[in-house]
Image (cartoon, rainbow over all chains, first blue to last red; front, side):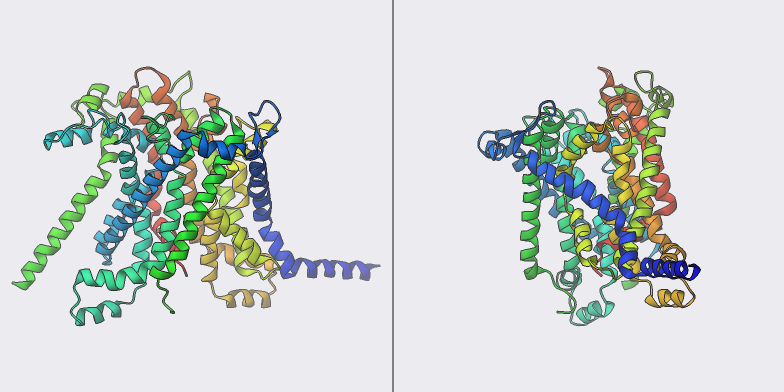
Length: 307
Length: 281
């Protein structure tokens, strides 16, 4: 009897120490969370996207109606996609270019350089906060700092948040302003480039500009790809800035009605959950499509060391 | 001659970098000094950085909050939500990272791909059903929806810790097994202590994200006494017809104090963390 339990506990111990058991014990939080907070909600969301649902009465199956409505009846939606694409396609490349140039200029290892880097990182650190959005709103107000600078330079004041052609630019500028985290990642990538590459280039008489385009850029291309994809996704999901600055309206005339804000308003202001879910799926498809295109084209401009 | 030219370019370089740095942080400085100004100065005299008269009373006015609820409540709420979410996220992410990076179990590749794909999933897709589920469970206006998801790890940090664990020599595990460690005690005695830099980085970054989070509280919290600081500042700006900008900037400045303090003391971990996640290898 005693021997038997001893055998059982040995068996149990052996079972517990098997790789499969250990793996699933440790991965369990992820598996539960993935099913409960990602897969199940995704399925529910897909179902809602084919229904009319206002949270009061039961969801009503409407087939593809929500998707059709989006592209044929809802000009605000089409506009919202357009505004978001404009924001992402302008701010992300400029942000990365800025990050790259500053990282390249600040490569030397010195106390001063690491202080500079930290200072340039501060906007990224706080940029997502409500506080910064409120400051931004004041800086670009009619009598704000930016307009006063323009005025003192002899230019006309711009009604930044009153003019539909101007309104997205402060938001784009705010995104570019937060180039710090990309810069830190690029700076880390730069330290991995062997110094011998630059020495060889210098011997061949290549100046700093040539070195940048023929050594730095190709060597960093995998890191640039990673940053491009991550920043693009962040850009598509941009919400706090436009919510705070436009008071949740996306004004003027929907010029800052970003995709994420429009989904939020459809869901939590109009309680049109079915329609909002359908829009969220279009957002997912759009992001996947652009990511796919970036990866497809990346073979032409991304160079891996061991090729 | 060549040497003096070099010194000139070097000085010029530093001056330019410093000037540009000033431009970069000017909005922050403008907010901090703005928190000591009155409305007239903020609205009509935006070119001036320093206040004419310092008004520290903006802080006490702002602290009073709105609707009888002071900012001590809002900041306490923020700390509560942020502390629990951060702690839960750090520990669960470490467990998961260990499994995915070190344990050869069936389905590891599959779960790894699932984990990476959540990195790219826009939160809008799951936001609506999550809200409806929490609403049916009567958990809206509680902190559960803001905290619970963090008990199951976050892909960004799992991936970062996996990179870190991959850098630890396998011989450590083998030696530990010879010494009688199980796969469980390898985690608690060896891996967990050794990845402490990655843990600290996770704590810092997660703290920032959660502290700044606006969309979550906006969706789930509608009773002012539950508001977190970020939501309260936005509502403070809207609360009365004439916003007290000085007081608003005072509370905004205070809301950034924890962020700056951590930045000051843990800068190194932050920089390392950001760099390692961005690297391909």
